[in-house]
Each structure stands twice: as C-alpha cells, then as structure tokens.
Length: 525
Image (cartoon, rainbow, N blue to C red; front, side, top):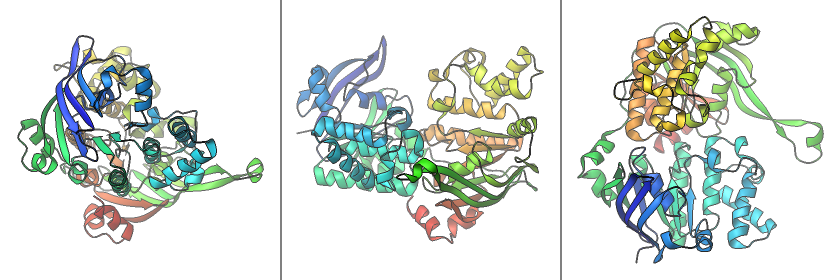
C-alpha cells in the first residue's frame, strides 16, 4: 500500500488551472524526484500535500495512509504537518522566523509534536544541527537566521524538518544553497535516515545529477502536466517525452572569449574579520574576532572570469563583500589602480560604478516596492544625474534588450511591473540589467544561477558570456557549482577556512589539482 497517493489532482487559482490531472504515488521508504522548469507546477503540487496553498482550489484526491488530506479537519492537519509530513522549503531566509534563534525554532517543533521539555528539546536541537553538518552546533543553536551563511541556513532548515521523525519528507530544492561536499553529505544523511526509519522522500529539484544519484523514481512536469514518470535509470537513459530530452540536454556549455592584458581589479593581502560575542562575563567588556578571509591576493584582467569556489563558510562571500567595500577589511583593493582606502565619498561613488554585483537570490535583492523601470534605472539617478527622464528610459530599455527580457518582442509593457510578477530567470535578467546599465568594468557574480532550473541556467550563462564579449566585462564568479565554473571561468581560486589554498588556470586547477581539498571538491561532483 502506498504511503501517499495522488489521484487526478487539479489546482486552480481563480479561473486559471495551474496543475492538471496529476497522479503519482510514493511507497514507504521510497525516493521520488519531481523535476521540471520553473513554473511547471512542482512546488505548488508539493505544497498541496499539506494544504499549504490557502488561495488555491484543489480537486481530486491526496491520500496519506489512506486518509484524504483534502477533507481533513484543522486538528488533523495540524497533527499531519511537521510530525507526519515535513517540508524543507527552497529559500530558508524567507521560511525561517527572523526574530527567533535557529535553536528556538527547532525546539518549538519538538515541544509541539513530541511533548519534550525545553532542556531535552534543546539538546535534541543541537544533535539535529550536528547531524546535518553545522559546525559548532552548540554555539550556532543560539544564532538568528541572518547570522548564518546561506548553506548554514539551509542545513538548519533540514535539521528542523527532520527533528520530529516524519514519515514523508518533502524537500523543495534542499541542496540549492549547499556546496558539493555538503550536498553529498546531506543526501547521504537523508538516505541513512530513510533506511533507518522507513521515511519516504519526495524531492523537488532541477539538479539532474542529484536525481541520478539519489532518486528511485522520477516524475517530469511541464506546464502543470505530468508528462513522464518511471524508474530513474529508465527515464534518464531512455526518455520518451521531448520535454524530458530537452531537460537532460540542458547542461552548462563552455563559451568564453580570450582575456586581455593588464589588470582591472587587484587584491593585496585582503583580510576580513568580524566581531563575535565572548562567552560569560567577558562578553560584557570585549568582543572576540572571527576571521573570514586571510591574506587574499589575486589580479583580474580585462575580459577575464575568476571563479572562486569552496565550501559554505570558506570566506567566498566575505571576500566578495570586501571587494565591493560592503564590509570592513584590511589590505588593499585596487580598481583600475584606484584604492578603496583613502577615497572621498564622491571618489568612492565613481568606484562603485566600475564595480557592480549580481546577488544569488534576485527576489530578495530587488526591491518589491519598485517597478522594473525604477530598479534598472536607479543607478543612473546616482551616476548620471544629467539624463532626462526620456533618456533614462531609453537606457533602461536598452539594458533590458541586452539581457533579452521582453514580452512578445516588446519591452515597454514590462517597465511598470514589479519583481514578483516575473519568474526566477526573468528576475535574474533584471538584476543583470541593473548591474550593467552604469557600464561597469567588473561584475561580481554571487551564485548567479544556483536558484535557477537547468534550462534557464544555461540561458543565463550564455547571456553572461555574450555580455562579457560585447562589453569586455571582467567577472568575479563566486559559486559552489563546479560545472558553472567549467563553463565560464578562465582562472580558478579555491578557498577553505578563510584561506586561498590553490589558484591557477581552469585547466590546471580542475585537471591537475595540487591541494587535497580541491581534489575532494572535484570528487564530490
């Protein structure tokens, strides 16, 4: 008998049907992967398993242990959620409560569903964080979500979901924010818990390598319709549907031009550390220091891409923030020979024009209160104040044209829309347009494709390559995705525990690594 059985599920938002006649089942202990592009209906289908989409109209059947979830009363749903069916959400920063510590959020779940006292629940919370690879779990249990890296937040979310021992775990992109070694550790952990407890797993992902390695069966969705399902090996090796074949063929393709001579960005002995609270009474009189980056040195040539790889917490993002002068640092950072240090406010404003950034999650980095025209044109208001409104709009339209964002060939209808009205791939194009409109020399790319499905990822990488050739851009690419590095980078820098452990050309570092740590990263792909 199936643990979960979905039969002819239809999901409507108003008059619009977003999921049509979807049927599948999961047995106890089974691992089913649900794959498809952004907007295919994967997540809304998964959320419906626990009736978490209040504005949707559901029809069909969702049977869990023989009981129809669609007809359950509120008390039964409360018992189901978190205890019997748990979910790992895709974006932990929006799913975690920002005013509660990570430990308190796990404790709350344990007390609610397991009836533990606070002391025992806290001990189990620390153990849960250790199980998912959170370093210094006893200290991190008292951290708030904003004090953790993206990978650490995702691990905390996984620990919370697993704390109550659910029978079915729904994992919505559970390893998107994790580096390759931790990704495998998390998958191994989930598999171990599945074997020990008989827990079934429904995993939603765009990572086909993960599907091949992890899932027993795979179901493929396109525009709300389940177009193909079967054993993973069968579907991946002999796909029957054209859409499945398209997904499997969508892998990052290397497309880079030649780098130029000279240096547009240089880091000299860059050091970044942060104040941390000391335990006990000492914390009242002084702060400790946590070192995030030590003695970082590199040069970046015109038209060159430097890939910065390493595990979560290795110092990659702290180095990127230091390059952008968004966090205090020591050492020297030179942009076209001009040092951040000793510059006036006006001079720093000019340097910021030369060095722009595209963040990992476009939805959180784009203001929800501004239209696309305001978001993309905001930099012109700071750096080119003499432009008229008409000239500014013309530049905005040109930037959106450069990143390939239009509707039926027209750009003007998009200008008055807001970020939430676009897909993830479209939002990332808006973020790229915002960075490019002020004509920078260097763009820092912080995990620019980690939240995108495979086909959109390929499109964005091709776009970045085209823009690099067109405008002679230099990129600092911060990522944990080795395949993206292979597709884009000229040179690679590997970071571990705040230090650069290896650096060199792409071919040298990835084909003949000297560091044991680099070999460990490559073996984890």
